[in-house]
Amino acid sequence: FRHIKMDECPSGVVNEETFKEIYSQFFPQGDSTTYAHFLFNAFDTDHNGCVSFEDFVMGLSILLRGTVQEKLNWAFNLYDINKDGYVTKEEMLDIMKAIYDMMGKCTYPVVKEDAPRQHVETFFQKMDKNKDGVVTIDEFIESCQKDENIMRSMQLFENVI
Image 1 (cartoon, rainbow, N blue to C red):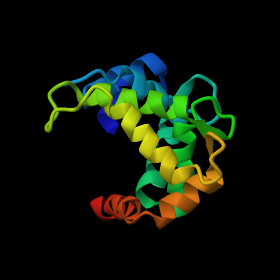
Image 2 (spheres, rainbow, N blue to C red):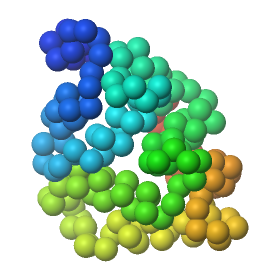
Image 3 (spheres, rainbow, N blue to C red):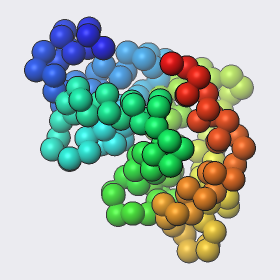
C-alpha cells in the first residue's frame, strides 16, 4: 500500500486513469481496462471522479472483513453499473466480458466465445426470481445467501488475512 500511496499517488488520491494503470499490473496477460473502470466506480462512493486512499481501504475492509450482507451489497453496487438499483442482463454481460478480457486468451480450459453470455443466462436463471428481466438487491442477496459456492468464496476472503 505504501508503494502505491507514495510513489503512484503522493496526494493519496487516484484518478481513474492512474487506477487503471496500477490495476493492469496485476493482470498483464489480459486487458483489465474495462473491469478496472467498473471497480474504480465501485470504490468511488461519492462519485467525484477520484478514489482516496481511505476510500480504497474502506472498500477493501468491507471485502475482507465485512459481514456477508456488506460484501453482497458491495458486489451488487459493482454489478449495478448505472446505479439505478437493478442489475440488467446488459450490465452483467458487460461485467462478464470485462472479467474474461482481464483473464486474457490464455485461460485453461480454453474459454468459448459465448461463455460470458452463458454465464449471464445462468446468473439470471438463479437470481431473477420474478422473471422481470432485472435483479434487485433483495433478489441478489437472497440468491447469494442460498448458494453454497458463493458463501464458501466469501469465507475464503475472511481466511486470507
